[in-house]
Image 1: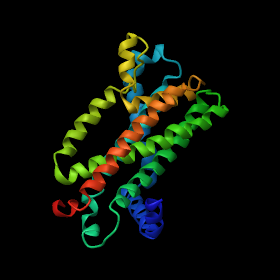
Image 2: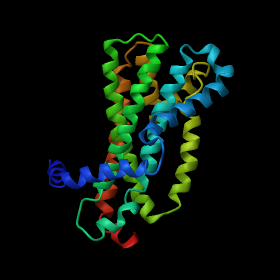
Image 3: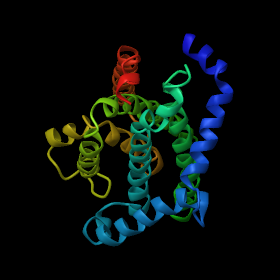
Image 4: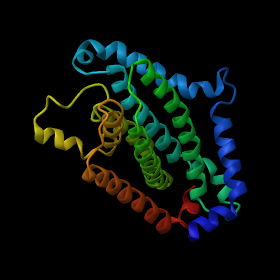
Length: 257
């Protein structure tokens, strides 16, 4: 309640930050907002050309399968990368004015979430062309979408706090996300692996989000209750850690920026 009251108090600033971040991202670009769609589509095209020969023949609706993975991971990668620099990029503001520092992170996440929603519309268009049957189950995609937003905020809280104290985190995160991409089964299926190996993928929160989307869209099935709880637990742990770090180091940020 206290956080919501603060957000309402700084509503104008928050809205201006979102507008600024959105305009800044596409400043001096010819295609502007269209890049939020073209970027994942170009990546999808490259991955389809490279991996269809190896995996496409054994995976139904392989284009949609790829799109699910690329859509989720691209959003995660962009949101966390932007979130990591949210404090350092706005140091001139919060060192001169007493404003909640998490506002800068939230504005970045709203901007990237809007890009995600635009790409999601294109994803549904691809589903229609690939003869995917739209059912009421598609409404359940709100669950992983909202949880992914909260998860990205949590990761962003952690990364932005660490980035203030350790600039090397940007390079380590770049390497980690590259490794995470290969561990998220974006372009391959884990069905051929032994059961104990498949269970290891459940330790990867990003794979859970990707799997949820594929389960609903491609398989027309609803994940189990424990799958929902596992996703919720991952989000709660990461978001809780991020909030704790911001609360603990709130005043120390000023001395390191």
